[in-house]
Length: 308
Image (cartoon, rainbow, N blue to C red; front, side):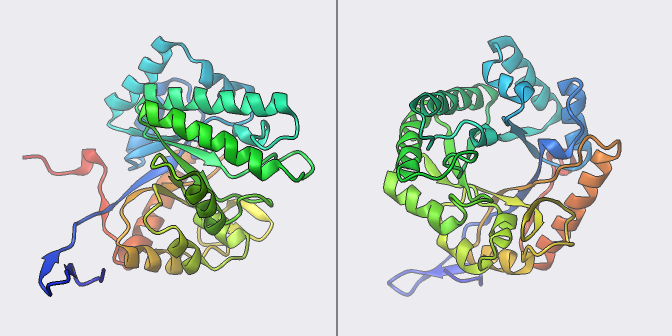
């Protein structure tokens, strides 16, 4: 495949390449915590984002979302629809605390339940992806079986996801477990489910001091969506865009080579600052400018599109 707008088949004829564009979204924690869901999704839309990824993290408040009753799930989904914002996915970072690769069988069983609960929640919210963290057992000492336990739990989760019609995307993480797209792809191939692929984090590639181009090339054809954040070695969070070591020019050049299109989520933590929506909108403008310079088209927010 080339970048000239056409492909060549074995007979020598050419045909147009499919068009595609990038849709920009934001991480929930970049915005102020929801006081009510209508105003939260309205702020996401007003900042120019087409989707938001919600968090299921280690905090009791966000972990409790796994047990939302049906009326609350409908209410959140409907509020997003009223604002014209998609719920792009769920970031399932609670597995830092409840490791699928834990040495404790009770913890592993709880981790499996969390996979099932998150997949069901995503289905009910209309979220197409559950981002699964590449942590085996983050707070435990490493042990010989942790990767095997992690893969076994994730393979079972992929079967559950297939029944719910929800995709799972492995995030390459900080730390010492699935720290690269290459490692994540080993697990994707090992499990061999069409419901399991990658949700790469460009920042975490740089935080691990890996080569951005070769890592993104390793995930070609299997990247459901992409995280954008800046980092420094040893600082995987809260580094302002453009002030860290993430190699965005190399990343966007490789995505252009792949003709990648899909959802790109800006991952930030603005810690409930009063100007969180302004900071997030500014980050969107920055990333949009970089993408345009790289020759990657961007889908506008639905409210900004012309109607006929």
